[in-house]
Length: 438
Picture 1: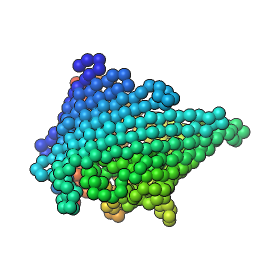
Picture 2 (picture 1 turned 60 degrees about the vertical axis):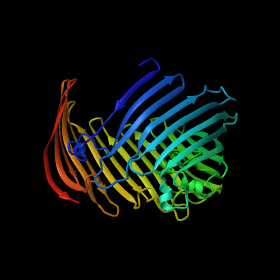
Picture 3 (picture 1 turned 45 degrees about the horizontal axis):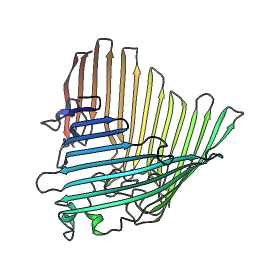
């Protein structure tokens, strides 16, 4: 539109829930449709969106709300421009609308923060942060009222919180193995302080939880002010977080990194659900191990262990390796159930995939996804061959799906694709074999 404004839309609709997946057009479970207007100006960004969602999973599913509208505006200050640090402010307005007499919600949100990092002469790194937010909720046909009629059916509820935090790091570096490698040990500790706003009164129960359901506690958010995703749920109280990061780098490019950490909440009520790893005052132990032997062999492992009995609650491991012509990737996931998130059972799966480039134009791929949890068995397997040159592409792929979560059916399908560069692509699902109900 102009140098600072642009607009667009992204719309995907399907008259049949299985069509997009059946013909390998899309594997999405929910289609997002959006019309938007954006503004870019220096460090500032604004966006106005109208959003609609279509759930294409079979069966009876919870209705997806429309966001009409969703408005955001972000401002970021210059580095070191405010008391030696940088400020940031966010404003948003969202109106979630559902059909019939289901819950509708409007939320106005404002947040501001200031952050500064100092490095002492002896190497100590301190990051100071002050943040605050104010939110205003308006709710109609509250879901909480349906569960507890003593609550209000329609309400307007304000909420505010301020947080002060400091995170300190002290990296220690030394040469090892006759100066063939560098070893780093970095203790990390942080304190987060905020007033206790989640005191389990009626106002807390009445505020809807639309965007803070998917709780994920790991090494990446251990020191965050709010370890809930989204806005609707805010972590309050005081806590002390600590951990240690160790690294080893050799002169040939090989490396290993390990982080282990935990936190202790010394005041504030329990606000996280059981199974999250944050429900107690002492959190679970989380960490990550990354190994790199070369660009052709890497491993990444993330974990979460119970703080009392050291029982595993989460494993995420991935190994990739090979050469320019042949590569293999394997991934293992185990995630314990978390109350209130929709996952009432633990999940355990193993994925194996490979790619073999026969020559610069021809390649072969295959993969398999195996459930090794409470209902073990093959869930998905595929194999294919493809050709790619300057003008033409061709591929043939066979997929065996067992107990597909979206369709509830098992099937065997073959997908054939032909593409002409810069013109388009033609594809057809030529065969569908062995369909049976789950």
